[in-house]
Length: 230
Image (tube, rainbow, N blue to C red; front, side):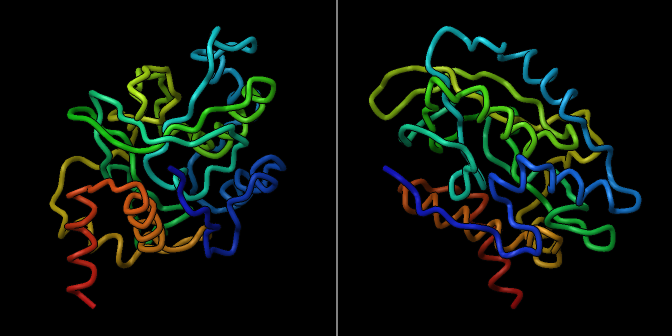
């Protein structure tokens, strides 16, 4: 089962080309007071900590739970419904960049500890897997806000594979502890940055989850409060 692919509405389009050419990192670097942008060498070093240059000896999957569902920016063989255990999807990372500002910070999704999460697994092509993973690191790890992990993932076929997933780093300054859907909705409603609005990010993700017949109670609650406040 696949999801409809979309491009963000912001001034900077989150495309494979823009990421590969360093436009995302350059944009962040040019914002006064922004977080440190990791160099390509730093990013490759971080990737090698969990995935060496010669791979992991088996197919590599990407676990998508947020914007990767509708804008993966990687080349893949197939997409299928998948589930991980020990982490759940949550708006738990504050952002003053991309989809927020210093005046009105927004929230981004992360995999927080506890529970389980249903999403999609993208199976990467063997001959271009590492290249695509490096592009993904330039996108998701540009400021080092997440902790990439290889997680056991159950596919809809009941097969268990390893997938790369970007989990929340509770020690990072942008980690946003547990809060109510109402408070999260208030932050999301005001947040906008060079990639677009937080509300667009939420709505596109909810549409993808709906296409996969996945219900996320927290996201539905946040959406309810957003509509109620309009």
